[in-house]
Image (cartoon, rainbow, N blue to C red; front, side, top):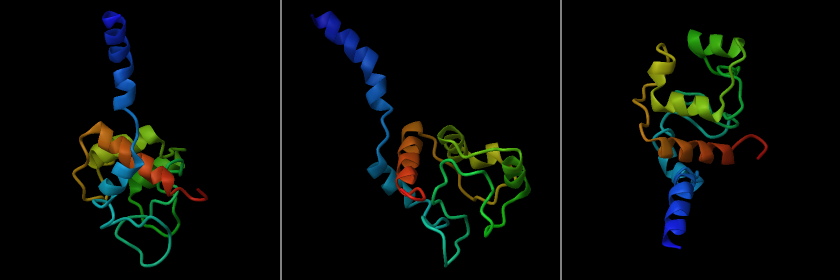
Length: 126
């Protein structure tokens, strides 16, 4: 019986560890809030608003001046998926070397998942 419990714990523990926590993501967003608003409208911040960012075409907001690589990624059909956002948040300059985003990134995958879960809660129309 113990062996079965141990096996179940080993099998299902990674699933629990990878769960997303939007409340934890809300706390992490404070780092982002200096440059990003959650909703569109004035006052414009240094970065684009993040309303509906998950699923949005990269570099597509008409009221923000994106750098060339982000505009190009969007024209090529690139969309901000959760995976793509996670990679970008991990190291923005590794993904888009000419990004205006002056942020070192978030190394911990769980924190990135939590932040993206929070961003999903403020998605346009949600």
